[in-house]
Amino acid sequence: MLRHLTAALLALAVVTATPAEATPALVPAADREVVFAADGTTVYGTLHVPEHRPGKRLRAALLLPGSGPTDRDGNQPPGFTPDTLAQLADALGGDGIATLRFDKYATGRTGLGAYRDHPEELDYPAFVRQAQAAYESLRDQPETDPRALLVVGHSEGAMTALLLGGTARPRPAGLALLQPQAIRLLDVVALQLKAQVAEATRQGQFTPEQQRTIDAAIDAAITSLRAHRPVDTTDLPSAIAQLFEAFQGVNARFVSSDDAVYPPDTAATLRPVTRVLLTCGTNDVQVPCFTTTALTTALRHRHAGGPGRVTLPGVDHLLHDTDHPNTLAPPVLDALRRFAGH
Image 1 (cartoon, rainbow, N blue to C red):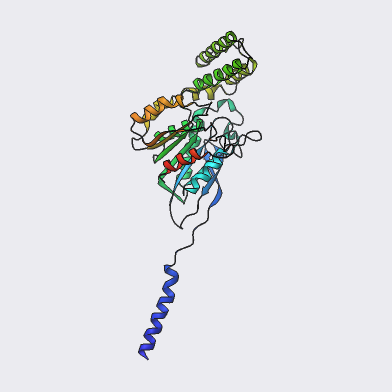
Image 2 (image 1 turned 180 degrees about the vertical axis):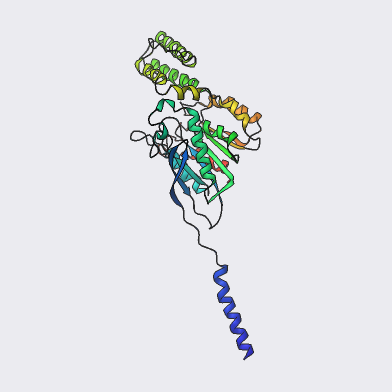
């Protein structure tokens, strides 16, 4: 009798122990709306949480868009919808990294917020503070590991990421600077405009003498903007004249404050152990690779971690190539995997 009872108890023990020892089901990947405050504005974003084990704290990345009214997905609807940030979220999610992307000022659900009645006061530091608030929101999410936070910025967003790298708490473990604004804003504008004028001259729209006159007028306009003087648009084509007029209007404070930042100087605020990826595409006419050289050198002097600057063959400013005009190009995905440590 005792033998049969002992056998029965052992059998029961095996049956009852099996469920406790079974591997718990994975939590499926999901998106959820995240709301946080910045300078009195309610900001709306999307947190993407990849598939993970219950209770596991995940590496997480804040995604920052490029210039202009670019929303959480990296779009300026309805006419410009490359989905840059949405695609970055998918790529990082595949490596098990949670991401937060948000509608910055003047976009999506966020809109102008506290600046609705005085948009002329919206300057670049306001966007940096908004990104700082987003970083803190990401830090405080229940699924994220605050010791393993990353900041991934595209174009102007990369410059913002660089600024956060030296000020955010806790300090980010890594920064991905994708096709970054790596020199002063108005210097980037001058390069882009002169490249456009040169191409128009090549096509016969301007004579070489007209090209020289326009280039000189562009330089003079930038000098005037930096000195806070009215811009003389007499020798500028109408499209370029309109751009400089916009720089003097409601956007004047933003342009001036953005142009005041020289990214190579900002690199000095990073911790030497910070892991940094800096990409440049050989087909990027907006941010040519040579414009990132001074920043690359500054990061090296700061002893930033790798992978450092990665040149992306055939990749344009939107992280596409000719074979992948609507999705992230393979060299971009490879660089992200190197950065993520896989």
